Length: 547
Image (cartoon, rainbow, N blue to C red):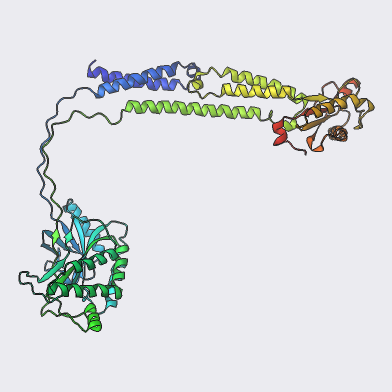
C-alpha cells in the first residue's frame, strides 16, 4: 500500500469512527449496538493505519553542521554594599568596571541598580556566571551605630527585591591586622579565602562567621605575623558581634535576594588614612591602634576561582532514525470517544435511577397505607416491573455493565413480595361492628376483634397500623373524625387485651376509600370498617412511630 493510499485510508477510517460515534446516540440505532461495533472495528483499523503511516521510510536528511566550540565567558562579580560606591569606584564612571583575576568586577551603587545589571549581563553574556561581593570596612564609619544604620538602610532598600531572584554572595572583610610587609605583593595584602564560583550553596551568616574564626586559627602556626593576624582577627570577630554589626548583617542577608556562600578576610597592609569604629573600639578595649597609611589606596580584590571550562564538544553522532511520535493521536481520539460514550451511559443510568426513585417514592410512603392502597400499589409495581424488564436488552447501556434495569426489576419484585406477605385484616364481615354515625363497638364485633388480636399477638415485634373508614352519610370533616374515633375504639380494645399502646398507630381516611357502593344499606355497612396492617420490621425499628 503506497504512502498516498495509507494517508487517505487513515482519513477515511477516522471519518468512519466519528460517524459511528454519532450514530450511537441515535436511539433506534444506538440500542441495536451496530454503530458501536462498527466504531470499535474502525478504531482498531485507524490505530493500525496511523502506526503504519508514522513508520514509513523518510528521505535521508543532510547531516547537521558541526557546532564550533564557544569560548568560555568571563565570570562577573557585582560589588555592592554601603562601602562599594566610595571605595571601589573607578575612573570609568560609565561602566564602573574593572578586570582582575580573570573576572569582570562591576560596581552596583544601590540595590535598585542590581536588577538592571543582571538583566544587562543576561542579555549580552547569557552563559556568564555571576556572583555578588559584599565588602565590609570596619573603619568605614566613625561609630558602629552609623555602620549599623547604613546596613539597615540597605536592608530596607533590598526589601522590594526579596523573592524576585537570588544571587550567591561572598562577604569580604577589610582591616589591617598585622605589620607584615609583603615585598612580593604590590597590593601588600593577605587574603584568607577566595571568591570561589564553584561554591554556590547558601550558608547562614553565623555559620560563616564561625568558619572564618576557625580559618584564622589554622592559618597561624608559628610565624609572628601569622600569630598577630590571628589574634587581632579574633578581636575583629568579637567586635562585629558586640557592636551589633553582625546582627545587622545577618538580618540584611535574611531579607534580601543575596545568598551568602562564604566569608573571606583581607589583611590590608597599606591600611587606611583614618581610624574608624573598629579602631576606636580596639583602642578603648586594649589601648592599641592599627597603623595608618599616608595615602588613600583602593582596597585590593581577592583571588577568583573561576568555574571549570565546559568540556569539549564530542564528535557528532550519526543521524538517528526518525523518532517515533510521542503521542499517537488515533489512540487519544479513541480514548476520548470511548470515554465520552461511557460518560453518556453513566448519565443515562443516573437518569433512569432518578426516574425509578420518583416512581417508588409514593409506594414507599407506608404512612398512607391501607388494604386498598396495597392492592393499587401492587398493580402499579407490576406495571413498573414490565417497563424496566423491557430495557434490560438495551445494548446502549448493557454493553458497559452500567444498565440498572435488571437490578431495578429485582428491587420491584422484592417490594411486591413485601406488600403481598404483609399481614392485613379488615373488620368487614356478616355483621357490621359499628352502627351508622357511631364509633361504639357492637357486641357482634367480638369475632372480628379476636381475629385482629390473634394477628397482633402473632407478630409481637411489629407495629400495627389501624385505618378507620366510614360511609358517606355525613360531610367530609365529620366522616374523617368518625373514622378516626372508630380506629381509636379498636385501639383501646387491643390495649385492654395486652397490646402495647406504642405499637399502634391511627390513620383516618373517612369515606375516601369505599369497598362497596354507598347507595345501599349493605354497601354502607361494609364501608363502615377498620383495617389493621402489620408493618414491616424496618419501618417499625426506624421511621414509623405513634403519632
